[in-house]
Image 1 (cartoon, rainbow, N blue to C red):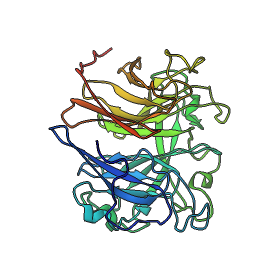
Image 2: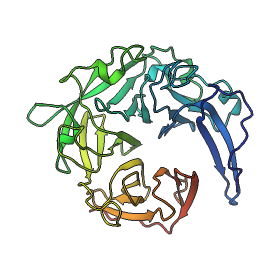
Image 3: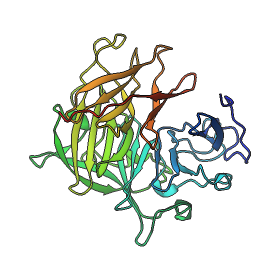
Amino acid sequence: MAPPRPAHRGPRLRPGRAGGCTVVEVHRDGTVAEWVGLAGTSTNCAGGRTAWGTWLTGEETEDLAGKNGMTKDHGYVFEVDPRDRRANLAPKPVKAFGRYAHEAVVLDPKRGHAYLTEDASGPNGLLFRWVPPQGFEHGRGQLRTLADDAGVLQAFRCIDSSGSFVDDLSRATRIGTVYGVDWVDVPDRDARTTSVRKQFTDGQVTRARKLEGMWWADGGAYVVSSYAREESPGAAHDGQVWFYDPKHRTLTLKVLLGVNAAPEEDGAFDGPDNITVSPYGGLVIAEDGEGVNHLFGATDSGRTYPIARNDLNDSEFTGVVFSPDGDTLFANIQDPGIMLAITGPWRRQPRR
């Protein structure tokens, strides 16, 4: 077993903050090494991987220095390099991606765009796109070279098949719903006086409650909205998974979970959060709902099925990802902080 609190050999980025990112190396012989890749950040959440083998971790907070005991501003994305520990000793926030309650981030390997979710309410959060400056090329260490205002940060705006503006993703009530997507520039991405999502008036952008996990696959981004209740203007639901196609600029509803009437029992699922695309077909989703929590799958048609259940407690599953060879599914139970390695045998899901 790796030590429960691995040593951090470099300086803490922000003294007094308990967040960070731990790198867990699982070797083919089953041995495990664990070390801290980032420390001193606050409320780190889903994040996402890059094509060059690093990890982007985002802070799910908007606290500025002087608030809630913060000594520096928080609410940024940081890059963690598991192959270069020296690069992690003085991490630089990627301020070009904006300052808000970050959840997940994915990168379009063809166009260079970054897509980022915001888990927030009052008003509901946004899906963002960052467009790199002309001539910028992604790669190891390149994000730290960006100026704080590099590129353009934008929020999404959806239009339905009739050409009408969609104010919130909770308006969709059927799998297969397709929206066209436009992008609206963010006025002040560092949100010095006003939260980014509050910088837009009604009618400018589309919102959704608890925009959570994302995963890049099939030429686009799978995006989770965890639930909708009275804080959303459309129909109540217990989870959506959307697919954004950047080529056609469309957003398609792939999975829709109805309101779970008995979350303390096995059966229906509620509160999808972190997500990955399975090499065997379909999606694997971590449940962060009421009552019993599961890892569950979803087929291409939106049908869901159970994979595992947390019998330890009611804590959520997080951080679902397959090993590069596809043999092992890694996942975590958030409290008390347990990492699981789940081996198959896995079977390819039939397309239906």
